Image (cartoon, rainbow, N blue to C red):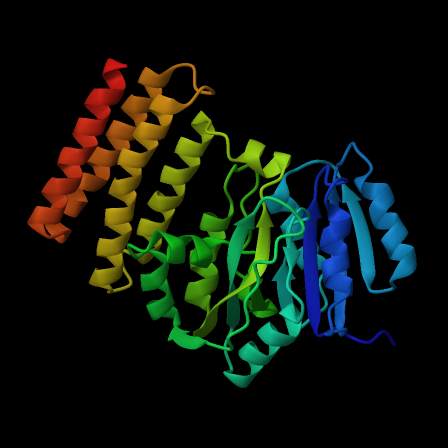
Length: 322
């Protein structure tokens, strides 16, 4: 009878031939050995599959599945559906992790009886940067406390909280939470559900995960019209999910972030070289902003509401003149 692994590591990989060896090496060299490594080759057209097959022969913990290209969200869903472990870790094929990554997160999640353990990430430009820290600092938060951090004003904490790849999860959190398919962004569509489904999150400010700014990640970050729709769609979904949860502070933070994105998306649309019909996008953003502004006017402090509204219409006027 095959032994059930403690941790299932899921890696979606699309044309990652330049990077995936570093990723795999950082995982198989860990001192924590009780894991399975599930690589979903998402229809790659380069040598990703051949590299992964080499490692499958080298390490019996590695399992490779090849699918049609359906995007990272679909690949992660496939990997999670195949996972046998008690815990799930998600790592992107062009990133790498620190020594002792799984040992540290496993200790954090089990000793505090948490449902999610989280380290900090750092953007890097190469695979040789020494960015990791290990102070041993950590803190425990309830799910609602973590949601207030997620939608708070600290942009660094927001990004660290919303990305899915710097964390260890109890597998059952994914029973009622799936990654979206055919979205440019997918972390935001699932992270709030995972946190809400949890009872406790334990987090450290130590940098444990290196997010590599590869050619593919830079290309994914280019600003297209779909990113505008994805961003506002997810915040529509988030607002609808929490509006009846009786947490006024959380709703206020969600509305402030939603309206703030109206400003940010307008400015990014103005600077984008990938969006052709900008007037159509401005109209879409304006309609979505005003829809939520009607709600926010009753729920936000008047001074905050007026400040955001002034900034939005100012940004829109500047953008439309260009």
